Length: 301
Image 1 (cartoon, one colour):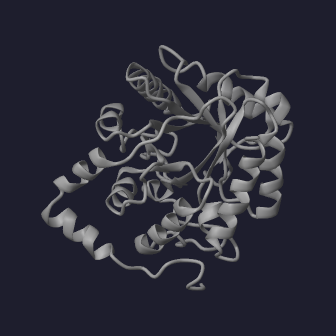
Image 2: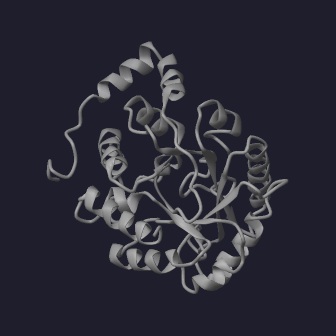
């Protein structure tokens, strides 16, 4: 990895020192953080996702422990957040706090990841408990909204507990006039027992239909959905604003093409991408982020 691509890892010992001796500085830094507003008419967003590690998802393509080094992850996040056109972050509490202490979120949007209990590959993956931020802590920390993942497996009774928890979180956020970013998937277990998301247009439409009705109001609900085939049909299923997720695409060029096509639709308000930009095949984080930002900027004119 070239030194021109990422900064040298430095200063992270200070994070440990603060956490060990002056943990109150985290809340103080959050209170001082310069905030920005939510998007205006016609404005689209590029948000960097950094909540994968909280549910044990450390792999990227053929690298099962690609995200295992926190220092390396923070290096990559700081490069991504420094690029023009990047609007903010979606992160679990530990990553969010590190970035706030580093001053990397000044003038950025910050969305807190709420449910990470459905650990990757676990037998309880569908029962996605809220183990991260809650609405109260998002509000107290001065964050801009919360994100939740909801996998819907009709064959797994645990699905209903996650649906109920997500509905409660949507309601709690809306009472504080904070956006709820809901990421729904229709899912099923494979013969090996692995939980797989169904990315057919019909399944995505079905998942959207359930997700947009969660909570006592949808006034502050946004969707986080994949760019799949027949996106015109998919987006016709909702009047809610939607952000496209990135995932871990095997072909990054094909992913850019899919995002570009979907961004032309009026209900699509931007991208929320993590691994695809933070760990690109050539490890050039700045170039990957700039390419994604160019797609988003083209739709802002």
